[in-house]
Length: 304
Image (cartoon, rainbow, N blue to C red; front, side):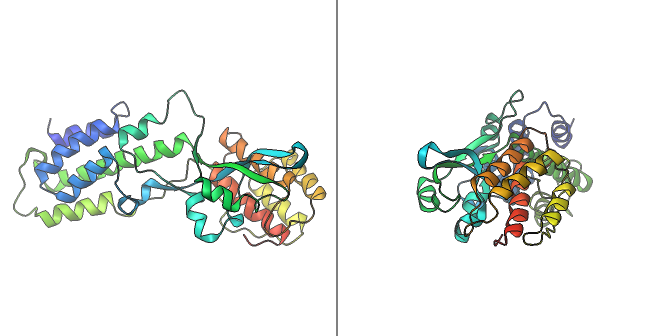
């Protein structure tokens, strides 16, 4: 079996960890004499040294949550933090997750028997800066970004898939390339083109920890028009009971102050996001929070 065939076999075998697959790719990179491939393999094994060097498939959208306290013992736990409550220049800091870790370290973050989400804490200075601007009458105690195991699995699968595509194309042009034999027509430039097309080329974006779901990209909810909000929520397959719970929360909080939701509406969004994390609603948690926040913001006439 040639090295190219070994790599193909390991790429389609989920029992072979990605780090082992990458080590074989390191041998291939040397034999191909391609510096870009060598560098990419090394980064994927050891981790990326800076954000500028991190490929797009390692940057994934997510949602932030926090614990809040208020007067007379009031407060909220695990409540979603709408991006509209944070200055625009900070949006990427709270709504994008960057994974610079090497493949083995990424794999160590998840367990096959544990599907619980992880938390990446916010920098404390950001939490202090925006802490009073999120929910009316409440102050932010701590905040974090949601990290689901499916996000990490998705990154590892992307690495595996791109390696497979790369070696298949290399094999079709030069079957013995893995043994260090390159035909004269298979120039370093052609190897480089194959690498950039398959490793850094256009591929489908990861749905941040999602499964099969219907993502509505156009949100059209009229201001203070319950029927339009209700129809939108029904299109997202939200249950009638959950929609009724939101209706009751809005009755108690008919107006939103500035860009802040009331505690009841915020708690309802948090409950729906929790259901998506538990698999009770087939929309990934980050997308769930984004869609609901935008729709309710339009209902209140807030910028979203």
